[in-house]
Amino acid sequence: MAGEEKNHGTLEGIITRSAGRWYSVRLSDGQMVQATLKGKLRLTEHYTTNPVCVGDRVSLEQHNHAYVITEVKERTNCIVRQSARDQATVQVLAANLDQALLLVTVAHPRTSLGFIDRFLVVSTAYGVPVFLAFNKADLYDALMMKQAEQWKNLYEGAGYSSLLISAKTGLGLDTLRQLLLGKTTLVAGHSGVGKTTLINALIPGLNLRTAPLSRYHNKGRHTTSAAEMYALPFSGYLVDTPGIKELGIFSLKLHEVGHYYPDLKPYLSLCRFHTCLHLNEPGCAVRQAVQNERIAPSRYESYCSIIHELKTDEPVYGRSF
Ligand SMILES: Nc1nc2c(ncn2[C@@H]2O[C@H](COP(=O)(O)OP(=O)(O)OP(=O)(O)O)[C@@H](O)[C@H]2O)c(=O)[nH]1
Ligand SMILES: [Mg+2]
Ligand SMILES: [Zn+2]
Image 1 (cartoon, rainbow, N blue to C red):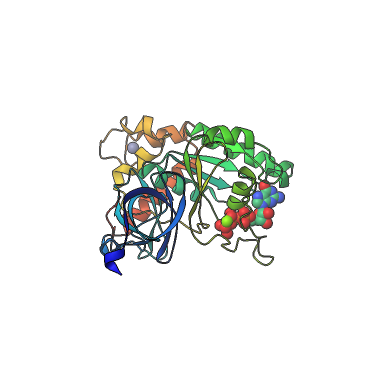
Image 2 (cartoon, protein in one colour):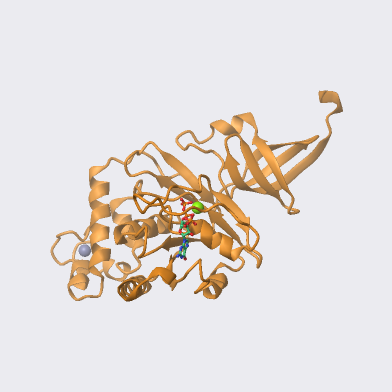
């Protein structure tokens, strides 16, 4: 009965999970509650599937035992994921992040350099600092270890912190804890690289569901189906995400792309033409730097592949925060 309804005033909180029409919210006093969204908020961002995402700061009202989200605060940043095959599928993974951890492995499911570079570009473009961890080090033979070291050096040389870890044995986790301390970190990567296993290792007692790789494909099965935020026992938060298969690049301007490659950046202003896209223009300082082995060939190749993709695809969506 409306007349007897008790309104407890406005509360503040952070979305920790969204599942269907229900949102889990951590209130500013630490209490976890379930809430629904006020009707009109459902219509605001029409080309994303989710108007409110994990990490969003919200205001809520409590009416008896029901909580309703009445306002979503402006985001400082967010990571939007768009499938490379289906451009209509755009999903805001999480918002208000301090950083992203891209989890990869040279065991299974092996991550390609092209995928790593795309994720680094997307993260950087959305204003989220990113670092890498090579997981499952306990499974590496001598050859794989050499490969992991090479890739680690490649990305450190390009300006990204990189660690060698094992979520299973705990190798490297002390160093990782230092990087996570006091921050909200999105954990991303292919399905089956061990995102959830790592989160379980960092948060004793959490026991989230993980699953072995499928026997036939040596690939993950998308065991985690929705993003969710968890509190670390030493201050900070982790956002577990469902595995990313492929990553579409969209809404970047051609001339912006080089700026999201820290290793290309020092050369961008040295090209003969200021409109240089570093493909085959004369007097290109970037290509010269590749020839002089100051830029790794794989990094330059992924740059070219992103430029070609942007040239052939009409950007459909504006970048929305
Ligand atoms: N040997 C070894 N196995 C690991 C390690 N980390 C994860 N695994 C295994 O890899 C498999 C997949 O792990 P998950 O944590 O479910 O992977 P995920 O990245 O969360 O996958 P999605 O939720 O599908 O995106 C499980 O069988 C884990 O036990 C590791 O460091 N070493
Ligand atoms: Mg998982
Ligand atoms: Zn150039």
